[in-house]
Image (cartoon, rainbow, N blue to C red; front, side, top):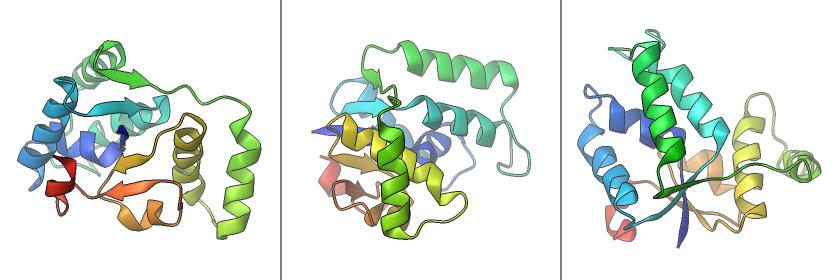
Length: 151
């Protein structure tokens, strides 16, 4: 099943002080070993970089060099496909935002969801279940509660 890996999964996988580190690392390992048909968007990698290099958001931030290496390694990994959002999804994003009454930064998850839909992705692995549950075309799996559904 085509599966999008959300930002928070990557953050937990590379943040050793996270209580979800081991599980997130295992999910990412499964993706890198092609046991999960994994996808990310550039936005997800940009968000990951922003979070893991910010001392206000993680206890032990990564250096710019380390975060860049992780992002580029994921970008070129043959096991993870990068989904490039097309300009055609812009109208879909605004239609989804309007129909769900989204406000503020909620539009960012809407862009991810619309990109997934346009690319035929049917599932997202994320800790932010409530942020994506509103999009009925996208199955949402919390890897820290729904581990069995990932197997």
